[in-house]
Image 1 (cartoon, rainbow, N blue to C red):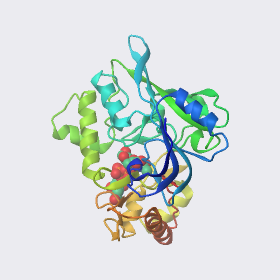
Image 2: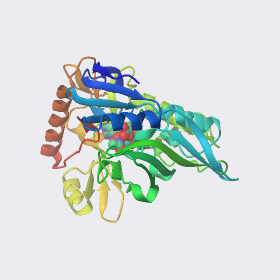
Image 3: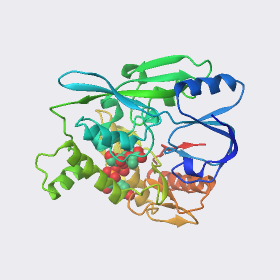
Image 4: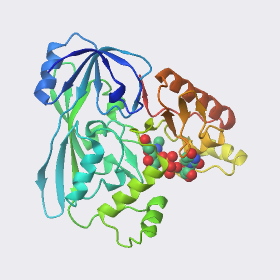
Length: 337
Ligand code: EPU
């Protein structure tokens, strides 16, 4: 374990932003993590997972602890289900592919989401009709303050749309070290309800799709819409899709009857922020090295040397313009540091 100084984080955030950590250390086991937390009790700390959901707008004046715990194993099984535990530092997509290779079902719709396993519960990641909360059983975490181990069961995590206790009441208090998922061994629940998936499977003549077929369909849809962070810096959806009260939505809808929306409850409607941003004229626009992706307006991109502040400015411009046009506030999904 070695602490590095003035360490560049460019390769540690998927936006590819150049920012420096005052100090940096990668930890490879829970013991190393405990040790460093104990040794550096008085120091300011910043916990870094896969760096796929943050925008760095400044250097980090703290000890950056990069969670690099590896390993996955089956902890329990019966005829129908398997309980799989993954350490926090496993790459999410590689973990998903591993589960599919074993013919374990439940994560296939979330193929190719960037980031590491340990951060998936924080914002209850989701895609194509599935969220982490659908297969999540529990996670283990350690308190930053006094290195106590705590297990969080699903009911304790307060999962919501891109929300959890780790973004709210428990914010900045815990480091997630491992996560357990309950996956199917047979009678997989293939979920192709999301329009694009069914169409993609039909195109490939997959009438009885396997987990691998669904995963491949998701991968090909994502590749067609979302930029690969290795080629073009980005953080996936920059904004959340806003949720409006039906009564408020109806007033706006009268003015914009072409607006896309999904009813999510008796009283609430979700509106795709990508649609709002496209209508506000931003899709595919570029401001210096900061821009809005040409195939998905919800994704902000770094063409090379954009600073975090430049991307943040573009995001503010988008928020203001969308608010002026529709009276709808769109909130960042990405953590702005
Ligand atoms: N749309 C536009 N213009 C755009 C983008 C989207 O009009 O530029 C419209 C589409 O035509 C469609 C609707 O908006 O009618 C929804 O678009 P899409 O299916 O692409 O999904 P999304 O709501 O924009 C969400 C997630 C994505 C996830 C996809 C697929 C959020 C914030 N984003 O995007 O998650 O991959 O659904 O399930 O909920 C992420 O969180 O990083 C992410 C990529």
